[in-house]
Length: 107
Image 1 (spheres, rainbow, N blue to C red):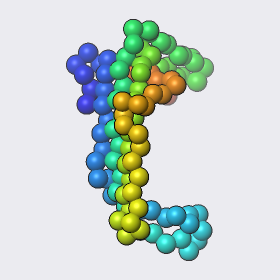
Image 2 (image 1 turned 90 degrees about the vertical axis):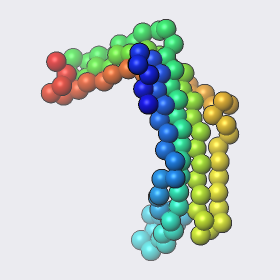
Image 3 (image 1 turned 90 degrees about the horizontal axis):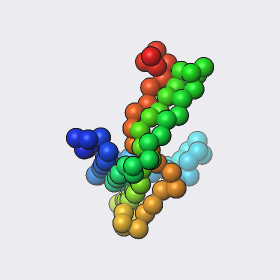
Image 4 (image 1 turned 60 degrees about the vertical axis):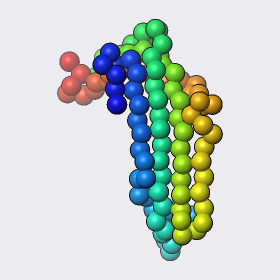
Protein backbone atom coordinates (compact mmCIF):
# COMPACT_ATOMS: atom_id res chain seq x y z
CA UNK A 1 0.00 0.00 0.00
CA UNK A 2 1.34 3.43 -0.96
CA UNK A 3 0.02 6.62 0.62
CA UNK A 4 -1.73 9.19 -1.58
CA UNK A 5 1.22 11.59 -1.26
CA UNK A 6 3.76 8.83 -2.07
CA UNK A 7 5.73 9.48 1.10
CA UNK A 8 4.99 6.22 2.89
CA UNK A 9 4.52 2.65 1.81
CA UNK A 10 3.87 -0.74 3.38
CA UNK A 11 4.60 -4.16 1.93
CA UNK A 12 3.00 -7.05 3.78
CA UNK A 13 3.07 -10.72 2.87
CA UNK A 14 1.30 -13.32 5.02
CA UNK A 15 1.44 -17.09 4.81
CA UNK A 16 3.47 -17.21 1.59
CA UNK A 17 4.15 -20.86 0.74
CA UNK A 18 7.84 -21.57 0.19
CA UNK A 19 10.13 -24.61 0.19
CA UNK A 20 12.64 -25.21 2.95
CA UNK A 21 15.80 -27.05 1.89
CA UNK A 22 18.23 -27.03 4.83
CA UNK A 23 20.91 -28.95 2.88
CA UNK A 24 20.69 -26.83 -0.30
CA UNK A 25 22.68 -26.65 -2.61
CA UNK A 26 23.30 -30.39 -2.21
CA UNK A 27 21.86 -32.20 -5.26
CA UNK A 28 19.87 -34.59 -3.07
CA UNK A 29 18.60 -31.89 -0.68
CA UNK A 30 15.20 -32.80 0.73
CA UNK A 31 12.45 -30.21 0.43
CA UNK A 32 9.81 -29.48 3.05
CA UNK A 33 6.84 -27.13 2.75
CA UNK A 34 7.21 -23.94 4.74
CA UNK A 35 5.51 -20.56 5.12
CA UNK A 36 6.87 -17.10 5.55
CA UNK A 37 5.61 -13.60 6.08
CA UNK A 38 7.09 -10.17 6.25
CA UNK A 39 6.17 -6.57 6.76
CA UNK A 40 8.26 -3.62 5.59
CA UNK A 41 7.29 0.00 6.20
CA UNK A 42 8.96 3.02 4.57
CA UNK A 43 8.36 6.62 5.73
CA UNK A 44 9.95 9.54 3.93
CA UNK A 45 12.01 12.15 5.70
CA UNK A 46 12.11 15.66 4.27
CA UNK A 47 15.50 15.12 2.59
CA UNK A 48 15.18 14.88 -1.20
CA UNK A 49 17.60 12.65 -3.12
CA UNK A 50 18.55 12.28 -6.77
CA UNK A 51 20.96 9.66 -8.09
CA UNK A 52 21.48 9.78 -11.83
CA UNK A 53 23.90 8.24 -14.30
CA UNK A 54 23.05 9.49 -17.78
CA UNK A 55 25.61 7.19 -19.44
CA UNK A 56 23.94 4.14 -17.90
CA UNK A 57 20.44 5.63 -18.37
CA UNK A 58 19.58 5.26 -14.69
CA UNK A 59 17.84 7.66 -12.30
CA UNK A 60 16.39 7.37 -8.78
CA UNK A 61 14.61 10.31 -7.21
CA UNK A 62 12.64 10.60 -4.05
CA UNK A 63 13.28 11.03 -0.35
CA UNK A 64 15.54 9.45 2.19
CA UNK A 65 13.35 7.24 4.31
CA UNK A 66 13.15 5.39 7.55
CA UNK A 67 12.55 1.71 6.87
CA UNK A 68 11.51 -0.95 9.36
CA UNK A 69 10.91 -4.65 8.85
CA UNK A 70 9.73 -7.78 10.61
CA UNK A 71 9.53 -11.37 9.41
CA UNK A 72 8.45 -14.88 10.36
CA UNK A 73 9.12 -18.37 9.04
CA UNK A 74 7.43 -21.69 9.80
CA UNK A 75 8.42 -25.19 8.69
CA UNK A 76 5.67 -27.32 10.29
CA UNK A 77 7.07 -30.68 9.17
CA UNK A 78 10.28 -29.87 11.07
CA UNK A 79 8.52 -28.35 14.06
CA UNK A 80 10.47 -25.15 13.41
CA UNK A 81 9.36 -21.53 13.58
CA UNK A 82 11.20 -18.24 13.85
CA UNK A 83 10.02 -14.68 14.33
CA UNK A 84 12.10 -11.52 14.13
CA UNK A 85 12.06 -8.84 16.75
CA UNK A 86 9.01 -6.53 16.52
CA UNK A 87 8.95 -4.03 13.67
CA UNK A 88 9.11 -1.15 16.15
CA UNK A 89 12.64 -2.22 17.14
CA UNK A 90 13.88 -2.47 13.53
CA UNK A 91 15.77 0.22 11.66
CA UNK A 92 17.61 0.18 8.33
CA UNK A 93 20.89 1.98 7.79
CA UNK A 94 19.71 3.38 4.44
CA UNK A 95 16.41 3.65 2.58
CA UNK A 96 14.83 5.69 -0.20
CA UNK A 97 11.20 5.99 -1.19
CA UNK A 98 10.60 7.34 -4.67
CA UNK A 99 10.81 6.32 -8.30
CA UNK A 100 13.42 4.70 -10.50
CA UNK A 101 13.74 4.66 -14.28
CA UNK A 102 16.24 2.96 -16.55
CA UNK A 103 16.90 1.79 -20.06
CA UNK A 104 14.30 2.72 -22.67
CA UNK A 105 12.15 4.36 -19.97
CA UNK A 106 14.97 6.70 -18.93
CA UNK A 107 13.84 9.72 -20.94
